[in-house]
Image (cartoon, rainbow, N blue to C red; front, side, top):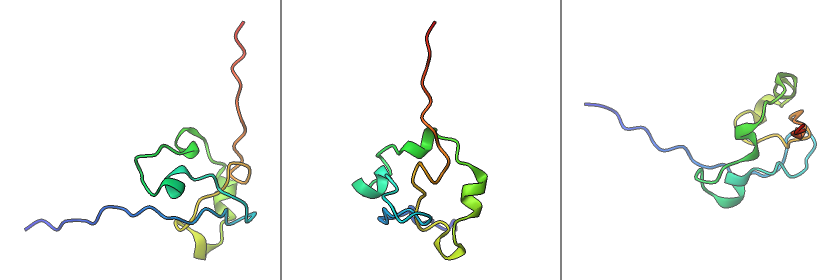
Length: 77
C-alpha cells in the first residue's frame, strides 16, 4: 500500500536569517505556494546559503540582498 506524503506547508517567517530584514517571500506573505516568489527566477549565491545558521536552514528565506541577487536590466540595442 503506497504511503501518502503530506503537502508541503508554507513557512510564514518573513525575516531574513542573516540581516533580520524582510525576506520578501511572496508565498510566506500570501500563505500559498501558488504565489510566485522572487527567488524562483534568481540565482542564489552559494556562499550566502552557507552563512545561514544551521538552526534556520529550511525554516526561513534569505532576502534578495543577502542572497547576493542583483537586479539585471536588459539593454536593447
